[in-house]
Image (cartoon, rainbow, N blue to C red; front, side, top):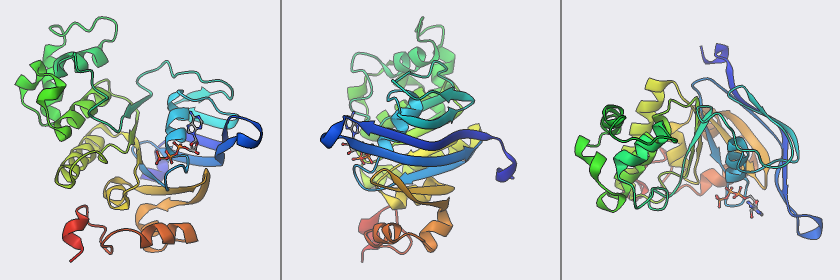
Length: 268
Ligand SMILES: Nc1ncnc2c1ncn2[C@@H]1O[C@H](COP(=O)(O)OP(=O)(O)OP(=O)(O)O)[C@@H](O)[C@H]1O
């Protein structure tokens, strides 16, 4: 089934360099990846391997030197950054629920603004806002509360509602659970997985935590110093890694074998 669904995201020979001369950083090297409609790809690799750079190129926050990138039918062109105009093509769920929500806006205003960036008429969008709060399992009265009144997990639910309420084709979740307590991580991941299936979203899920990646990904891509080391079906890669670097990453997972989402419980 999945093989037959159309390509939603496509990257070929993508090259990104920051700076020039002896201080240049070659952040992505001839990277090629593709995702079909409805698939989720876990992007893993140590700090500095280029994961966020890829996310930022795909959203148009960063430009790229050469290669091709097609995002939900929009071809990005090499050169300087050019933010994607079609907000429904791709939405990003950011890492930090503490800084990504404006402290001066209620949850309702935040979601209404995503629905209607020009108007942001909260009353007009009230019903849709409440519907989305319910979809992320927050009570309707949350609409009138400010970020400081929510826990970290609840704020991340609001960030998920803000990203998904416009019905994007692709979402990129960049370390969205790393700032959360272990007990809350699994709840947020289960919610995201459920919404992803309902909405048939295509997703790139970036994380250092291989247990988290295994929980939400159909496929996995392993980056090292901007290069793709290995890519394939998540279970196949995790069970039988082909690249030495993937084996090293797996060996560093606390409490393997099942990659428990709560390694503290698995370590015994
Ligand atoms: N705006 C920038 N200017 C200069 N160098 C950058 C910039 N953004 C990223 N880099 C460099 O590109 C490389 C890849 O960084 P990137 O943030 O994509 O890695 P990452 O895998 O997402 O790391 P982390 O897991 O720590 O977020 C790093 O060497 C980083 O220092």
